Image (cartoon, rainbow over all chains, first blue to last red; front, top):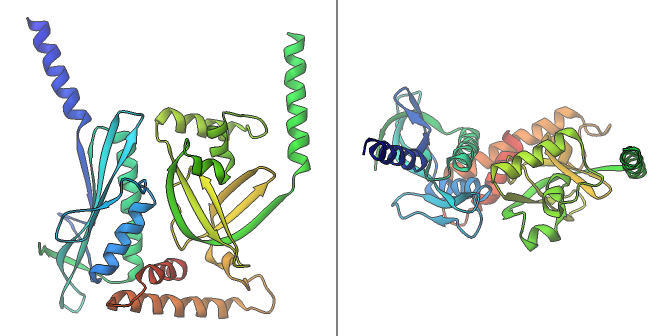
Length: 146
Length: 182
């Protein structure tokens, strides 16, 4: 009986670990950047970053009111992670104190293939962050606007 | 045992001869397209395949084994990540080449070097300077002028992206930004 209980909790723990999620964002408790860009531009940036990592067949637009894309990556033939890249509306403060409307980039994964999903999320986030910084439109994060 | 040693030496000799007979060519171009596919797909087989991917697709280890290369391929297969990245390069003579490789770290607008040695090929990111038709290496094209031109193009691309709006080619502006602001 004791052995069965142990096995049960072990299975629960393994399932929990296998289907974990990760989110990378351009802002955290310590601050970060909001990028003052038009929605068409952030949409294209998300699409470019995702399409270099996600198979064309699985890449699709998200259902959020703000720009987002999602798609799947696999590990072997059974495990799958869903990768989501989005640009959440947010307010930022420029150096002169002006408040601007912009976007914060977030990339997350959820599923049972962290070995493929984790590095994929990191690479997509790095690409987005690099693109965003190149635009030269960064302002200090104030709050989310969604 | 002797025959095994003989075959080993023969393979080494053949590999050396093969490598020696092929000359290395390098072409520079901007990446204009990226498509994610798999090692098993017919699309990947029909492309100019990089040596790393070629090994994985063909299961043929002839002519391309080096410690690092073989190690990378084995690791890639063991890790179960079966994605292949098909990059399209626009060359200075306006022709295009497509190459499928394992590396996911290139993006549209990046300048890359396509290195070919016989049936093997490699793609690696390089400075945008190499993709200019008159590179800074050219005597009649001073580096200062090139940098000024790049800075102007970067500024133009950023302005377009900040404004956005109808009728703006956002994808093209992003390509320009990656090429000239990075």
